[in-house]
Length: 121
Image 1: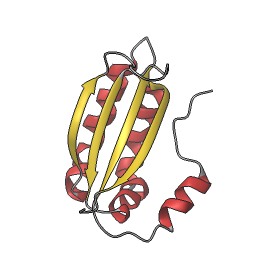
Image 2: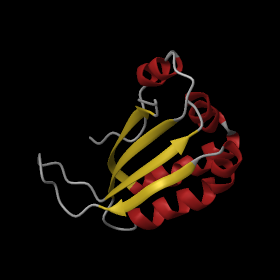
Image 3: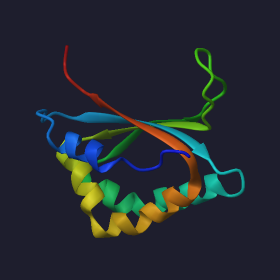
Image 4: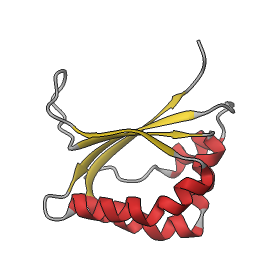
């Protein structure tokens, strides 16, 4: 079975992180073959107002051509920049955003979401 949403433990661990700077969220997406990409587009459109209000920006979004190392196959990669972990948590708690999550869930067979701290270095 695919992974679509974070577990409670993952969300709790995220909330307990001691980091206040901007973050990137790396999304690996595998769409359902019949209408998954279209449903994901509805998710993006439906959530766009909340994304803008919170200050989330899509840094990169493209179809994936092929795996070069490993054998997992994904349809798309999306990298989003958030002002902070708190912004990500705020988005997930937002009632308007929660209405759009159904489209994301309907769209995907599987996904991965990786947090990358935007630390200077």
